[in-house]
Every structure is written in C-alpha cells, then in structure tokens.
Length: 109
Image (cartoon, rainbow, N blue to C red; front, top):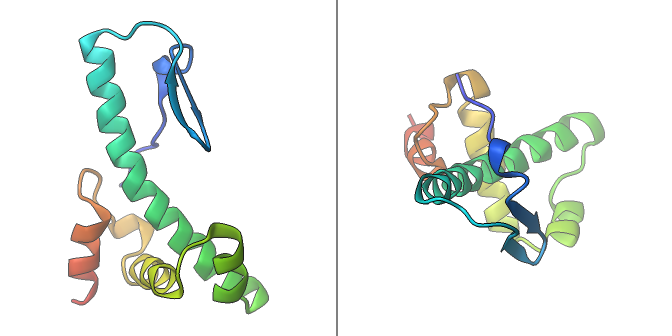
C-alpha cells in the first residue's frame, strides 16, 4: 500500500512553486535528506497521478490526450505511457519505494 507523499514538517522551511524550490529557513542535514527523499518520491507520485487523472478523464468524459497535452505541455507518448502504467498497475499493487520506471517494467507482465 502506498504512503502519502508530502513535505510534512518542512512546510515552514521550504516553499515549492511552479518555478522551483526555495529554502525559507535553514535546514539541518537530516531535514535536507528528508526533503531529497520526498522530492524523489514525488517524481514517481507525479507520473502515477497524471496517469490516474488521464484514465479518469477517459472513463468520465471520453477525453484524454488532446486536452492533457495542451494543459500539461507533455507529449502524447509521455501521457500515453503514464496512463498505460497507471492502468496496468492499480494503486493497490503499487509498491512504495519503487520508482515509476520499476512499475513500468512489471506492467508488461
């Protein structure tokens, strides 16, 4: 079962926006390490989130790629990959700690 991905106790020390990350107040080494691990996990979460959202849009509205390409700026192939892996590996089968790429490899099975 997957865990929630969030910055948690670092929200008063780190600010994330569309243009990047700003450190608002000093981070200890352990906090920086936690931040790095969280950002890595968010990369996997982001790819699955896009895939899950695309699959929802197809099921609910019959729409997927044209609109998603326009609003995300991602290519058709990237979006198709996200949706395919998200569909092939349901949330209850996703393994926390493994990257989206690991899941893509086993999705073929």
